[in-house]
Image 1 (cartoon, rainbow, N blue to C red):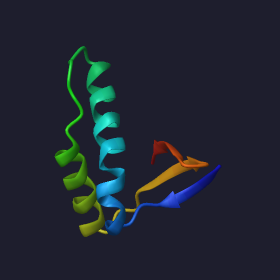
Image 2 (image 1 turned 60 degrees about the vertical axis):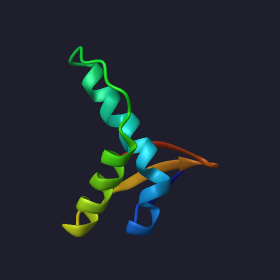
Image 3 (image 1 turned 30 degrees about the horizontal axis):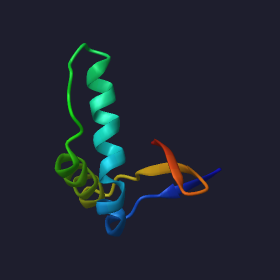
Image 4 (image 1 turned 180 degrees about the vertical axis):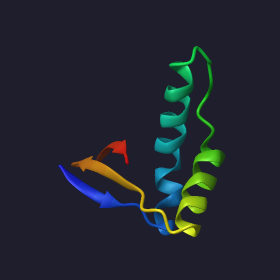
Length: 67
């Protein structure tokens, strides 16, 4: 497993993972939500704009976790 920094160029590819992560977090509060891929894309762009580091753990071709 390796940690990979998510760059702005990766936003479209990683947006579904971010969207699924946010939907899962909402489910812990009892909120049923569908992943919003556009919002995931915007979140990656915003975090890169503000110079936050966003990383993911990858094994093979599967991303497991956002950090």
